[in-house]
Length: 90
Image (cartoon, rainbow, N blue to C red; front, side, top):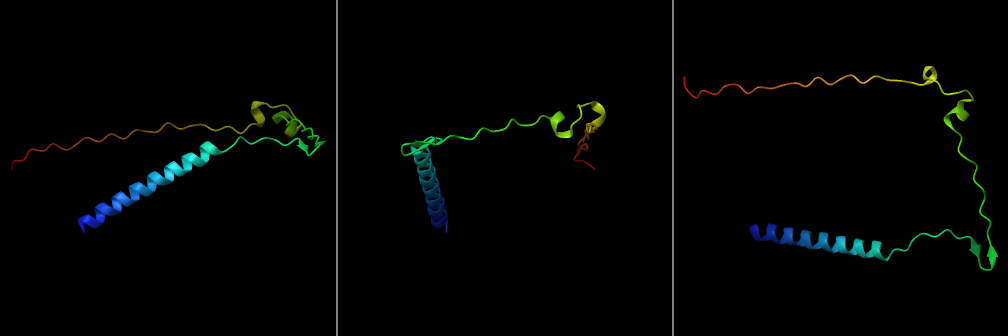
């Protein structure tokens, strides 16, 4: 039984190491993702993105403290524990 457990631990260790090295190799050989802006001899024009609206732009009104949800944080009370005295005698 002890031999079986030892062999199992060695097998799991070797497979884990092999998986790690294989993953490392795949990541090392991966190329950077490039945006394709041409197909053959034709240049593809990328569309212009609209700017993201601000918080004020979403609601249509200026941002003030009165229309923002607020919350308060209650302090956590730390509990203390003291060990009972051990005397060992009667």
